[in-house]
Length: 120
Image 1 (cartoon, rainbow, N blue to C red):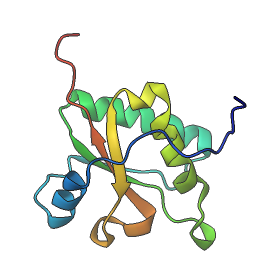
Image 2 (image 1 turned 120 degrees about the horizontal axis):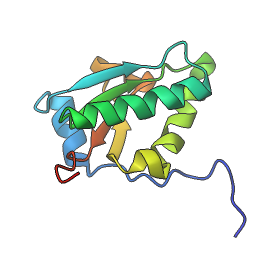
Image 3 (image 1 turned 45 degrees about the horizontal axis):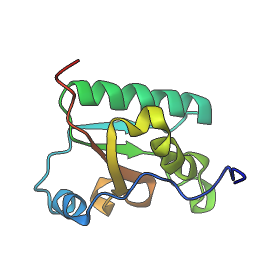
Image 4 (image 1 turned 45 degrees about the vertical axis):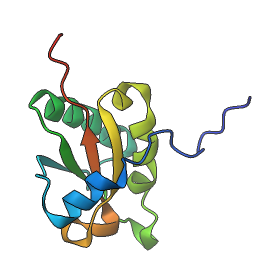
């Protein structure tokens, strides 16, 4: 089948339990990455570095701030789900969800990380 560049992301939304616990404040936010000012290329690279480093420190839930962009359709906000579905990044991510208003709302996402592989 032909590859469509902007098809729906393959990264599953985490089961809603984690998202609800984060929103209630019962899950610790381990780190935050703000992508404001990044280009698509530098944002994607920064995201990969950040997620791998966070996972290696034992982080399980992080916030990625993309901003909303002009008219709510920022390029980084639109690209984030696609980056999270790429095999290199998907290896460390179990899912993601839009952030609560108190954590950045429409311009931010919770990203849930796999436990670090301790057998490497």
